[in-house]
Length: 265
Image (cartoon, rainbow, N blue to C red; front, side, top):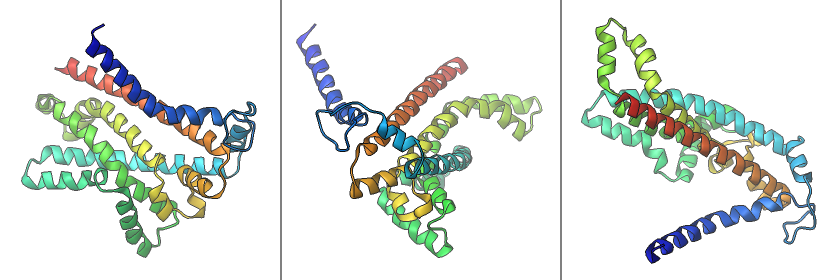
């Protein structure tokens, strides 16, 4: 192996170790039989997973995160797909400005979005409600749907829709039979990104959610301030596994989307 290739692989390995070392340190602590975050482990036990998944505040928070994330993802997929179709159809100067507005939640710091959402929802009495939390999470989730769907629409051959219209298909039938199958992998990929954005949020939940809407990241944040036990590492491990599964699903969907685009071309 050439020296520069060896140096390249060493640098890549060093970066991976630097990124994965904190994760590798957290996961074993979740199996500790002790009550403190210490190495070496006093023993191995599943007691903290039983505490997290056996009921109580952790399971309630997990249910809240899944519910809010699922509803926000569904709404964001609908709104993001409609926005992408509109932005793709209109190529005027204002469409670029509108695209910037739609994608701004990916650029603006989340604390600013949280504060703005609070001042918008508070007069409507939507703070400390599921509806308010879902609305705020939808705002940050929509851009994650617009980006892949808009890219899929740009790749999709417009002649397919013209051919369907020439055969007598109505705009609705053309969308359901031609456009929708072509952008479905992008919609699914965007939905996974949107769900991950909602599921991992803690800043918005701190300002918008009430005692009954405590999500899993917010419960973890409270646990860091009150008492740090291996239960936190058990929750973190569950979230790591969940996020890794979402990432792998995204990779599968993106590969399928690229494969379909090659076949279409």
